Length: 503
Image (cartoon, rainbow, N blue to C red; front, side, top):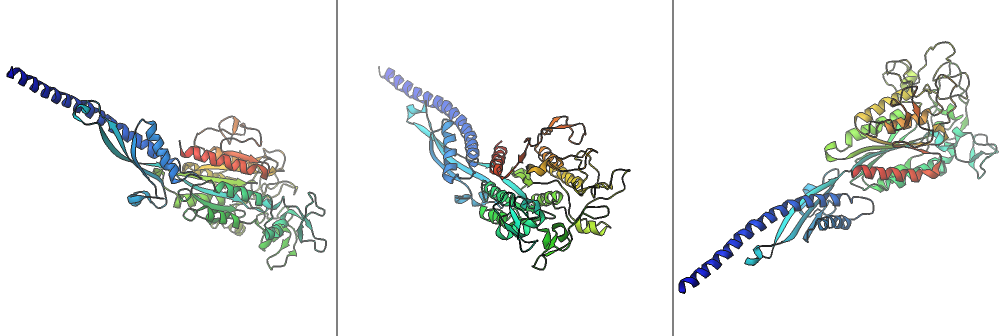
Protein backbone atom coordinates (compact mmCIF):
# COMPACT_ATOMS: atom_id res chain seq x y z
CA UNK A 1 0.00 0.00 0.00
CA UNK A 2 2.88 2.34 0.79
CA UNK A 3 4.23 1.85 -2.74
CA UNK A 4 0.90 2.69 -4.26
CA UNK A 5 0.67 5.89 -2.25
CA UNK A 6 4.13 6.95 -3.36
CA UNK A 7 3.20 6.31 -6.98
CA UNK A 8 0.08 8.46 -6.64
CA UNK A 9 2.13 11.30 -5.14
CA UNK A 10 4.79 11.02 -7.83
CA UNK A 11 2.12 10.91 -10.53
CA UNK A 12 0.47 14.01 -9.12
CA UNK A 13 3.78 15.82 -9.03
CA UNK A 14 4.54 14.71 -12.58
CA UNK A 15 1.08 15.83 -13.71
CA UNK A 16 1.59 19.27 -12.22
CA UNK A 17 4.99 19.46 -13.86
CA UNK A 18 3.57 18.35 -17.20
CA UNK A 19 0.77 20.92 -16.91
CA UNK A 20 3.34 23.57 -16.00
CA UNK A 21 5.47 22.65 -19.03
CA UNK A 22 2.38 22.56 -21.27
CA UNK A 23 1.21 25.88 -19.84
CA UNK A 24 4.64 27.38 -20.30
CA UNK A 25 4.65 26.29 -23.93
CA UNK A 26 1.07 27.32 -24.65
CA UNK A 27 1.01 30.55 -22.67
CA UNK A 28 4.56 31.35 -23.80
CA UNK A 29 3.41 31.12 -27.40
CA UNK A 30 0.43 33.34 -26.52
CA UNK A 31 2.75 35.86 -24.90
CA UNK A 32 5.02 35.87 -27.96
CA UNK A 33 2.03 36.45 -30.25
CA UNK A 34 0.67 39.08 -27.89
CA UNK A 35 4.00 40.91 -27.87
CA UNK A 36 4.01 41.07 -31.68
CA UNK A 37 0.37 42.18 -31.68
CA UNK A 38 1.17 44.79 -29.03
CA UNK A 39 4.02 46.21 -31.10
CA UNK A 40 1.77 46.54 -34.14
CA UNK A 41 -0.90 48.15 -31.95
CA UNK A 42 1.65 50.57 -30.49
CA UNK A 43 2.75 51.54 -34.00
CA UNK A 44 -0.88 52.27 -34.84
CA UNK A 45 -1.44 54.10 -31.56
CA UNK A 46 1.56 56.34 -32.23
CA UNK A 47 0.19 57.18 -35.68
CA UNK A 48 -3.30 57.74 -34.26
CA UNK A 49 -1.78 60.16 -31.76
CA UNK A 50 0.31 61.98 -34.34
CA UNK A 51 -2.74 62.48 -36.54
CA UNK A 52 -4.21 64.65 -33.77
CA UNK A 53 -1.74 67.44 -34.57
CA UNK A 54 -4.53 69.74 -35.69
CA UNK A 55 -5.80 73.15 -34.70
CA UNK A 56 -7.80 72.96 -31.48
CA UNK A 57 -6.32 69.64 -30.35
CA UNK A 58 -4.23 69.23 -27.19
CA UNK A 59 -1.72 66.80 -25.74
CA UNK A 60 -4.65 65.24 -23.86
CA UNK A 61 -6.37 64.57 -27.19
CA UNK A 62 -3.20 62.95 -28.54
CA UNK A 63 -2.93 60.71 -25.47
CA UNK A 64 -6.60 59.74 -25.61
CA UNK A 65 -6.34 58.85 -29.32
CA UNK A 66 -3.40 56.53 -28.57
CA UNK A 67 -5.22 54.92 -25.62
CA UNK A 68 -8.42 54.45 -27.64
CA UNK A 69 -6.51 52.76 -30.44
CA UNK A 70 -4.90 50.25 -28.04
CA UNK A 71 -8.24 49.54 -26.40
CA UNK A 72 -9.84 48.96 -29.81
CA UNK A 73 -7.20 46.28 -30.45
CA UNK A 74 -8.39 44.42 -27.36
CA UNK A 75 -5.63 45.38 -24.92
CA UNK A 76 -6.22 46.15 -21.27
CA UNK A 77 -4.01 49.22 -20.96
CA UNK A 78 -2.45 49.24 -17.50
CA UNK A 79 -0.06 52.13 -18.12
CA UNK A 80 0.37 54.44 -21.10
CA UNK A 81 2.80 57.31 -21.51
CA UNK A 82 2.60 59.60 -24.50
CA UNK A 83 5.28 62.16 -25.28
CA UNK A 84 5.59 64.94 -27.84
CA UNK A 85 7.97 67.86 -27.97
CA UNK A 86 5.37 69.84 -26.04
CA UNK A 87 6.00 67.41 -23.14
CA UNK A 88 9.00 65.25 -24.11
CA UNK A 89 9.84 63.79 -20.69
CA UNK A 90 13.24 62.09 -21.01
CA UNK A 91 13.02 61.98 -24.83
CA UNK A 92 13.67 65.60 -25.81
CA UNK A 93 16.66 64.65 -27.95
CA UNK A 94 14.46 62.36 -30.04
CA UNK A 95 11.28 64.43 -30.19
CA UNK A 96 12.40 68.07 -30.27
CA UNK A 97 13.91 68.42 -33.71
CA UNK A 98 14.70 71.65 -35.54
CA UNK A 99 12.44 72.41 -37.31
CA UNK A 100 9.71 70.66 -35.32
CA UNK A 101 8.29 67.40 -36.59
CA UNK A 102 4.96 65.84 -35.62
CA UNK A 103 6.52 63.03 -33.60
CA UNK A 104 4.64 61.07 -30.93
CA UNK A 105 6.29 58.46 -28.70
CA UNK A 106 3.95 55.95 -27.03
CA UNK A 107 5.05 53.66 -24.19
CA UNK A 108 2.52 51.17 -22.80
CA UNK A 109 2.21 48.25 -20.43
CA UNK A 110 -0.62 45.77 -20.94
CA UNK A 111 -1.89 42.87 -18.85
CA UNK A 112 -2.18 39.45 -20.52
CA UNK A 113 -4.19 36.80 -18.52
CA UNK A 114 -2.66 33.32 -18.33
CA UNK A 115 -4.60 30.17 -19.23
CA UNK A 116 -2.67 27.05 -18.25
CA UNK A 117 -0.15 28.62 -15.90
CA UNK A 118 -2.91 29.58 -13.53
CA UNK A 119 -2.66 26.06 -12.08
CA UNK A 120 0.75 27.02 -10.71
CA UNK A 121 -0.43 30.39 -9.46
CA UNK A 122 0.63 32.56 -12.42
CA UNK A 123 -2.53 34.56 -13.08
CA UNK A 124 -1.27 37.13 -15.61
CA UNK A 125 1.78 38.69 -17.22
CA UNK A 126 2.64 42.26 -18.14
CA UNK A 127 4.09 43.20 -21.50
CA UNK A 128 5.60 46.56 -22.36
CA UNK A 129 6.64 48.23 -25.58
CA UNK A 130 7.27 51.53 -27.26
CA UNK A 131 6.74 53.09 -30.69
CA UNK A 132 7.26 56.47 -32.30
CA UNK A 133 4.90 57.72 -34.97
CA UNK A 134 4.99 60.76 -37.20
CA UNK A 135 2.39 62.65 -39.19
CA UNK A 136 3.44 64.72 -42.15
CA UNK A 137 4.11 68.38 -41.44
CA UNK A 138 3.36 71.25 -43.80
CA UNK A 139 5.94 73.60 -45.27
CA UNK A 140 3.66 76.07 -47.02
CA UNK A 141 4.19 79.30 -48.93
CA UNK A 142 1.17 81.59 -49.08
CA UNK A 143 1.34 83.91 -52.13
CA UNK A 144 -0.94 86.94 -52.25
CA UNK A 145 -1.42 89.21 -55.26
CA UNK A 146 -1.12 92.85 -54.16
CA UNK A 147 -1.02 94.47 -57.61
CA UNK A 148 -2.86 97.80 -57.97
CA UNK A 149 -5.96 96.04 -59.35
CA UNK A 150 -6.50 94.80 -55.79
CA UNK A 151 -7.73 98.33 -54.99
CA UNK A 152 -10.05 98.70 -57.98
CA UNK A 153 -13.21 97.75 -56.02
CA UNK A 154 -12.68 100.56 -53.50
CA UNK A 155 -15.51 103.10 -53.87
CA UNK A 156 -13.76 106.47 -54.17
CA UNK A 157 -14.66 109.79 -55.70
CA UNK A 158 -12.43 112.64 -56.90
CA UNK A 159 -12.28 115.54 -54.49
CA UNK A 160 -13.95 118.62 -55.93
CA UNK A 161 -11.01 120.85 -55.03
CA UNK A 162 -8.25 118.66 -56.43
CA UNK A 163 -8.54 116.48 -59.56
CA UNK A 164 -5.95 113.96 -58.35
CA UNK A 165 -7.10 113.52 -54.76
CA UNK A 166 -9.51 110.67 -54.07
CA UNK A 167 -11.74 110.32 -51.04
CA UNK A 168 -13.90 107.39 -49.86
CA UNK A 169 -17.56 107.32 -50.79
CA UNK A 170 -20.56 105.16 -50.02
CA UNK A 171 -21.85 105.53 -53.56
CA UNK A 172 -21.56 102.35 -55.65
CA UNK A 173 -21.22 104.50 -58.77
CA UNK A 174 -19.39 107.71 -57.75
CA UNK A 175 -19.28 110.65 -60.07
CA UNK A 176 -16.66 111.73 -60.88
CA UNK A 177 -15.06 108.38 -60.08
CA UNK A 178 -11.48 108.19 -58.88
CA UNK A 179 -9.28 106.71 -61.66
CA UNK A 180 -8.52 103.12 -60.73
CA UNK A 181 -4.69 103.33 -60.88
CA UNK A 182 -4.79 106.21 -58.37
CA UNK A 183 -6.85 104.42 -55.74
CA UNK A 184 -4.01 102.53 -53.96
CA UNK A 185 -2.40 105.83 -52.98
CA UNK A 186 -5.47 106.91 -51.00
CA UNK A 187 -7.03 103.68 -49.70
CA UNK A 188 -3.69 102.31 -48.46
CA UNK A 189 -3.48 105.22 -46.02
CA UNK A 190 -6.68 104.09 -44.31
CA UNK A 191 -6.28 100.36 -45.02
CA UNK A 192 -9.59 100.27 -46.88
CA UNK A 193 -8.47 98.94 -50.27
CA UNK A 194 -10.91 96.43 -51.71
CA UNK A 195 -10.90 93.61 -52.55
CA UNK A 196 -7.45 93.41 -50.97
CA UNK A 197 -8.65 93.96 -47.42
CA UNK A 198 -11.11 91.06 -47.75
CA UNK A 199 -8.49 88.89 -49.46
CA UNK A 200 -6.06 89.52 -46.62
CA UNK A 201 -8.67 88.70 -43.98
CA UNK A 202 -9.50 85.37 -45.66
CA UNK A 203 -5.78 84.56 -45.95
CA UNK A 204 -5.30 85.12 -42.22
CA UNK A 205 -8.24 82.84 -41.48
CA UNK A 206 -6.59 80.15 -43.59
CA UNK A 207 -3.19 80.61 -41.93
CA UNK A 208 -4.86 80.10 -38.55
CA UNK A 209 -5.71 76.50 -39.58
CA UNK A 210 -2.08 75.40 -39.51
CA UNK A 211 -0.62 73.66 -36.42
CA UNK A 212 2.34 75.79 -35.37
CA UNK A 213 5.27 75.33 -34.88
CA UNK A 214 5.05 71.85 -36.44
CA UNK A 215 3.57 73.39 -39.60
CA UNK A 216 5.41 76.40 -41.00
CA UNK A 217 4.08 79.15 -43.26
CA UNK A 218 6.06 81.61 -45.38
CA UNK A 219 4.32 84.67 -46.84
CA UNK A 220 5.06 86.14 -50.29
CA UNK A 221 3.33 89.01 -52.05
CA UNK A 222 3.75 90.05 -55.68
CA UNK A 223 3.11 93.03 -57.87
CA UNK A 224 5.87 94.20 -60.23
CA UNK A 225 8.23 92.33 -57.94
CA UNK A 226 7.84 89.44 -55.53
CA UNK A 227 8.56 90.11 -51.86
CA UNK A 228 9.18 87.70 -48.99
CA UNK A 229 7.54 88.92 -45.76
CA UNK A 230 8.40 85.95 -43.55
CA UNK A 231 10.24 82.73 -44.43
CA UNK A 232 9.61 79.18 -43.21
CA UNK A 233 12.10 79.42 -40.37
CA UNK A 234 10.32 82.54 -39.13
CA UNK A 235 6.76 81.42 -39.84
CA UNK A 236 6.41 79.05 -36.89
CA UNK A 237 3.65 80.93 -35.06
CA UNK A 238 0.33 82.28 -36.19
CA UNK A 239 1.10 85.67 -34.65
CA UNK A 240 4.19 86.05 -36.85
CA UNK A 241 2.36 84.96 -40.00
CA UNK A 242 -0.61 87.17 -39.15
CA UNK A 243 1.65 90.20 -38.70
CA UNK A 244 3.31 89.50 -42.04
CA UNK A 245 -0.01 89.29 -43.88
CA UNK A 246 -1.31 92.37 -42.08
CA UNK A 247 1.75 94.36 -43.20
CA UNK A 248 1.08 93.95 -46.93
CA UNK A 249 -0.40 96.90 -48.80
CA UNK A 250 -1.59 97.32 -52.38
CA UNK A 251 1.11 98.21 -54.90
CA UNK A 252 1.08 101.91 -55.72
CA UNK A 253 2.76 102.88 -59.04
CA UNK A 254 2.69 106.57 -58.09
CA UNK A 255 5.44 105.96 -55.52
CA UNK A 256 8.12 105.44 -58.18
CA UNK A 257 9.07 108.02 -60.79
CA UNK A 258 9.54 105.36 -63.50
CA UNK A 259 6.02 103.93 -63.00
CA UNK A 260 4.17 107.14 -62.03
CA UNK A 261 2.87 107.61 -65.58
CA UNK A 262 0.94 104.34 -65.14
CA UNK A 263 -1.12 106.01 -62.39
CA UNK A 264 -1.22 109.47 -63.96
CA UNK A 265 0.39 111.09 -60.94
CA UNK A 266 3.76 111.24 -59.22
CA UNK A 267 3.77 111.10 -55.41
CA UNK A 268 7.47 110.48 -54.87
CA UNK A 269 7.97 113.91 -53.29
CA UNK A 270 5.18 113.39 -50.76
CA UNK A 271 2.79 115.68 -52.59
CA UNK A 272 1.10 114.15 -55.62
CA UNK A 273 1.38 116.02 -58.90
CA UNK A 274 -0.30 115.16 -62.23
CA UNK A 275 1.89 113.61 -64.93
CA UNK A 276 1.04 112.56 -68.50
CA UNK A 277 -0.81 109.24 -68.38
CA UNK A 278 0.70 106.32 -70.27
CA UNK A 279 -1.10 105.83 -73.56
CA UNK A 280 -0.60 102.57 -75.46
CA UNK A 281 0.62 103.18 -78.94
CA UNK A 282 3.15 102.19 -81.54
CA UNK A 283 6.62 102.67 -80.10
CA UNK A 284 5.44 103.31 -76.52
CA UNK A 285 7.14 100.93 -74.13
CA UNK A 286 4.50 99.48 -71.75
CA UNK A 287 6.95 97.63 -69.51
CA UNK A 288 6.71 99.94 -66.47
CA UNK A 289 2.94 99.39 -66.16
CA UNK A 290 2.12 95.64 -65.91
CA UNK A 291 2.28 94.43 -62.31
CA UNK A 292 1.42 90.72 -62.12
CA UNK A 293 4.81 89.06 -61.75
CA UNK A 294 3.68 85.45 -61.36
CA UNK A 295 7.04 84.17 -62.53
CA UNK A 296 8.83 86.04 -59.75
CA UNK A 297 6.32 84.95 -57.10
CA UNK A 298 6.63 81.25 -58.00
CA UNK A 299 10.42 81.52 -58.24
CA UNK A 300 10.67 83.08 -54.78
CA UNK A 301 8.27 80.52 -53.26
CA UNK A 302 10.28 77.65 -54.72
CA UNK A 303 13.55 79.14 -53.45
CA UNK A 304 12.15 79.26 -49.91
CA UNK A 305 11.00 75.64 -50.07
CA UNK A 306 14.23 74.40 -51.64
CA UNK A 307 16.43 76.20 -49.10
CA UNK A 308 14.39 75.76 -45.93
CA UNK A 309 11.83 73.01 -46.57
CA UNK A 310 12.10 69.73 -44.70
CA UNK A 311 13.37 66.86 -46.77
CA UNK A 312 11.04 64.28 -48.32
CA UNK A 313 12.16 61.53 -45.94
CA UNK A 314 10.48 63.38 -43.05
CA UNK A 315 7.13 63.08 -44.82
CA UNK A 316 6.72 66.85 -45.00
CA UNK A 317 4.35 68.28 -47.59
CA UNK A 318 5.71 71.12 -49.71
CA UNK A 319 2.79 73.26 -50.75
CA UNK A 320 1.94 76.64 -52.25
CA UNK A 321 -1.37 78.46 -51.98
CA UNK A 322 -1.59 81.34 -54.44
CA UNK A 323 -4.28 83.93 -55.16
CA UNK A 324 -4.16 86.16 -58.23
CA UNK A 325 -6.64 88.32 -60.13
CA UNK A 326 -4.76 88.74 -63.42
CA UNK A 327 -2.73 87.02 -66.09
CA UNK A 328 1.08 86.89 -65.93
CA UNK A 329 2.29 90.10 -67.55
CA UNK A 330 5.72 90.89 -66.12
CA UNK A 331 8.81 89.08 -64.86
CA UNK A 332 11.81 89.65 -62.66
CA UNK A 333 14.37 92.01 -64.24
CA UNK A 334 16.62 90.21 -66.71
CA UNK A 335 20.00 91.38 -65.42
CA UNK A 336 21.96 89.71 -68.22
CA UNK A 337 19.94 91.25 -71.06
CA UNK A 338 21.69 93.73 -73.36
CA UNK A 339 18.45 95.74 -73.41
CA UNK A 340 18.33 98.33 -70.61
CA UNK A 341 14.51 98.37 -70.16
CA UNK A 342 14.54 94.56 -69.94
CA UNK A 343 17.21 94.80 -67.25
CA UNK A 344 14.99 97.27 -65.39
CA UNK A 345 11.51 95.85 -65.94
CA UNK A 346 11.81 92.27 -67.19
CA UNK A 347 10.52 90.55 -70.29
CA UNK A 348 8.17 92.21 -72.75
CA UNK A 349 9.08 90.96 -76.23
CA UNK A 350 8.78 93.23 -79.24
CA UNK A 351 9.38 91.68 -82.60
CA UNK A 352 8.49 92.03 -86.27
CA UNK A 353 5.63 89.63 -86.99
CA UNK A 354 3.90 88.93 -90.31
CA UNK A 355 1.73 91.74 -91.74
CA UNK A 356 -1.47 92.58 -89.80
CA UNK A 357 -0.15 91.17 -86.53
CA UNK A 358 0.49 94.63 -85.12
CA UNK A 359 3.06 94.61 -82.32
CA UNK A 360 2.14 91.58 -80.18
CA UNK A 361 2.60 92.08 -76.43
CA UNK A 362 3.08 95.85 -76.95
CA UNK A 363 0.18 97.36 -78.82
CA UNK A 364 -2.69 95.92 -80.82
CA UNK A 365 -3.69 99.17 -82.53
CA UNK A 366 -6.44 99.77 -79.99
CA UNK A 367 -5.57 100.77 -76.41
CA UNK A 368 -8.63 98.89 -75.09
CA UNK A 369 -7.02 95.56 -75.92
CA UNK A 370 -4.77 93.73 -73.50
CA UNK A 371 -2.66 92.13 -72.21
CA UNK A 372 0.72 93.74 -72.46
CA UNK A 373 3.90 91.68 -72.34
CA UNK A 374 2.25 88.36 -73.19
CA UNK A 375 0.56 87.17 -76.36
CA UNK A 376 -2.81 86.38 -74.81
CA UNK A 377 -2.77 82.79 -76.06
CA UNK A 378 -2.18 80.18 -73.36
CA UNK A 379 -1.70 77.29 -75.79
CA UNK A 380 1.08 79.12 -77.65
CA UNK A 381 4.14 78.39 -75.51
CA UNK A 382 7.62 79.48 -76.57
CA UNK A 383 11.09 78.34 -75.48
CA UNK A 384 13.39 80.80 -73.74
CA UNK A 385 15.47 81.06 -76.91
CA UNK A 386 12.53 82.46 -78.91
CA UNK A 387 12.09 86.18 -79.56
CA UNK A 388 8.46 85.61 -78.57
CA UNK A 389 9.33 84.30 -75.09
CA UNK A 390 7.02 86.34 -72.84
CA UNK A 391 5.97 86.78 -69.21
CA UNK A 392 3.56 83.86 -69.32
CA UNK A 393 6.20 81.57 -70.86
CA UNK A 394 8.58 82.47 -68.01
CA UNK A 395 5.88 81.68 -65.44
CA UNK A 396 5.12 78.36 -67.17
CA UNK A 397 8.79 77.43 -66.91
CA UNK A 398 8.54 77.93 -63.14
CA UNK A 399 5.60 75.53 -63.03
CA UNK A 400 7.86 72.89 -64.59
CA UNK A 401 10.30 73.43 -61.71
CA UNK A 402 7.53 73.07 -59.10
CA UNK A 403 6.22 69.93 -60.76
CA UNK A 404 9.67 68.33 -60.76
CA UNK A 405 10.09 69.16 -57.06
CA UNK A 406 6.64 67.66 -56.27
CA UNK A 407 5.31 70.89 -54.80
CA UNK A 408 1.51 70.74 -54.45
CA UNK A 409 -0.08 74.02 -55.55
CA UNK A 410 -3.58 75.25 -54.71
CA UNK A 411 -4.56 78.24 -56.86
CA UNK A 412 -7.38 80.76 -56.54
CA UNK A 413 -8.41 82.91 -59.48
CA UNK A 414 -10.11 86.06 -58.25
CA UNK A 415 -12.57 88.31 -60.01
CA UNK A 416 -13.76 88.95 -63.54
CA UNK A 417 -10.26 89.40 -64.93
CA UNK A 418 -9.82 85.64 -64.81
CA UNK A 419 -11.96 85.13 -67.89
CA UNK A 420 -13.11 88.50 -69.18
CA UNK A 421 -9.86 89.95 -70.49
CA UNK A 422 -10.42 92.28 -73.44
CA UNK A 423 -7.90 90.72 -75.80
CA UNK A 424 -7.46 91.37 -79.51
CA UNK A 425 -9.99 89.26 -81.47
CA UNK A 426 -8.83 86.29 -83.45
CA UNK A 427 -5.39 84.71 -83.63
CA UNK A 428 -6.35 82.29 -80.82
CA UNK A 429 -6.36 85.01 -78.14
CA UNK A 430 -8.05 83.91 -74.89
CA UNK A 431 -10.27 86.16 -72.74
CA UNK A 432 -9.66 83.55 -70.02
CA UNK A 433 -5.87 83.32 -70.41
CA UNK A 434 -5.46 84.20 -66.71
CA UNK A 435 -7.75 81.42 -65.58
CA UNK A 436 -6.14 78.89 -67.92
CA UNK A 437 -2.78 79.64 -66.37
CA UNK A 438 -4.07 79.27 -62.80
CA UNK A 439 -5.87 76.05 -63.71
CA UNK A 440 -2.79 74.58 -65.33
CA UNK A 441 -0.68 75.61 -62.32
CA UNK A 442 -2.91 73.63 -59.94
CA UNK A 443 -3.70 70.75 -62.29
CA UNK A 444 -0.13 69.95 -63.28
CA UNK A 445 1.12 69.90 -59.68
CA UNK A 446 -1.64 67.87 -58.01
CA UNK A 447 0.30 64.61 -58.42
CA UNK A 448 -2.26 62.52 -60.31
CA UNK A 449 -0.84 63.03 -63.85
CA UNK A 450 -4.30 63.74 -65.27
CA UNK A 451 -5.56 66.83 -67.08
CA UNK A 452 -8.52 67.25 -64.73
CA UNK A 453 -9.27 70.79 -65.93
CA UNK A 454 -9.76 69.67 -69.53
CA UNK A 455 -13.15 68.50 -70.73
CA UNK A 456 -11.54 66.65 -73.60
CA UNK A 457 -7.95 65.98 -74.56
CA UNK A 458 -4.93 65.40 -72.34
CA UNK A 459 -2.49 68.07 -73.53
CA UNK A 460 -3.07 71.51 -72.02
CA UNK A 461 -1.14 73.19 -74.86
CA UNK A 462 -3.05 71.53 -77.69
CA UNK A 463 -5.16 74.21 -79.46
CA UNK A 464 -7.82 71.52 -79.92
CA UNK A 465 -8.15 70.81 -76.19
CA UNK A 466 -11.51 71.72 -74.66
CA UNK A 467 -11.27 73.26 -71.20
CA UNK A 468 -13.98 72.90 -68.60
CA UNK A 469 -16.47 75.80 -68.45
CA UNK A 470 -15.07 79.11 -67.26
CA UNK A 471 -15.34 79.70 -63.56
CA UNK A 472 -15.76 76.00 -62.76
CA UNK A 473 -13.34 74.65 -60.12
CA UNK A 474 -11.20 71.69 -61.09
CA UNK A 475 -8.29 69.78 -59.60
CA UNK A 476 -6.84 72.17 -56.96
CA UNK A 477 -8.06 75.32 -58.74
CA UNK A 478 -10.84 77.48 -57.33
CA UNK A 479 -12.61 80.51 -58.75
CA UNK A 480 -13.72 83.34 -56.46
CA UNK A 481 -15.99 85.79 -58.31
CA UNK A 482 -15.90 88.11 -55.30
CA UNK A 483 -14.63 88.34 -51.73
CA UNK A 484 -17.71 86.64 -50.24
CA UNK A 485 -16.56 83.20 -51.44
CA UNK A 486 -12.95 83.41 -50.31
CA UNK A 487 -13.28 82.11 -46.76
CA UNK A 488 -15.16 79.03 -47.94
CA UNK A 489 -12.48 78.35 -50.58
CA UNK A 490 -9.65 78.71 -48.07
CA UNK A 491 -11.45 76.30 -45.71
CA UNK A 492 -11.70 73.73 -48.49
CA UNK A 493 -7.99 74.11 -49.27
CA UNK A 494 -7.13 73.56 -45.58
CA UNK A 495 -9.32 70.44 -45.58
CA UNK A 496 -7.57 69.05 -48.66
CA UNK A 497 -4.15 69.68 -47.16
CA UNK A 498 -5.16 67.79 -44.02
CA UNK A 499 -6.44 64.85 -46.10
CA UNK A 500 -3.12 64.69 -47.96
CA UNK A 501 -1.20 64.67 -44.69
CA UNK A 502 -3.12 61.66 -43.42
CA UNK A 503 -3.11 59.47 -46.50
